[in-house]
Amino acid sequence: MSLSRQRCFSSGRDSVRSARDFVHDVLAEWDVPDRRDDVRLCVSELATNAVLHGAQSGREFSVRLSVEGLLLRLEVRDGGGGRPEVRSPDTDQCSGRGLRLACEVADDFGVTEHAVGKTVWLAFKIASAPAWLRSRA
Image 1: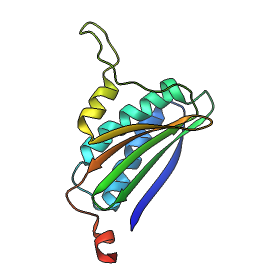
Image 2: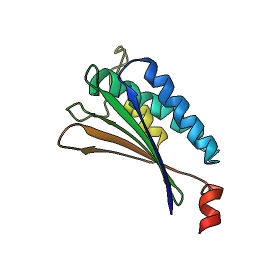
Image 3: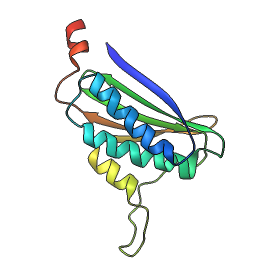
Image 4: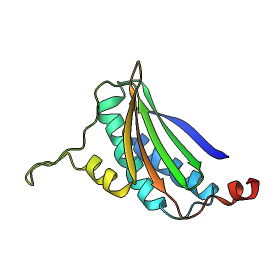
């Protein structure tokens, strides 16, 4: 069995905070205490990238959380082209570290390309499945 929750957000900068709050609320509802800060940090990065580089003006991006067994997956889908790359910027560069940081915090990373847009995902190993899932197993 698995759990899944998804929400769409506008492409405005305030949406990053809303996406972070969404993730926090869902993880609290699911009673997933471990990795909560890691996932919130990573959704901030992925949502920011969606707003700045992926979601065209006036378009939305979506955030999806799912848990299957001991694996929590965070996905951010936008309608933009291109494939995000983990970079190694020079020390004097002011940007380009966020995706690297997210990949270091998460246990797995990938990009799924679609006919229009892409989904950037991160996976996190968690200590125990949410109680709701354990009671159904």
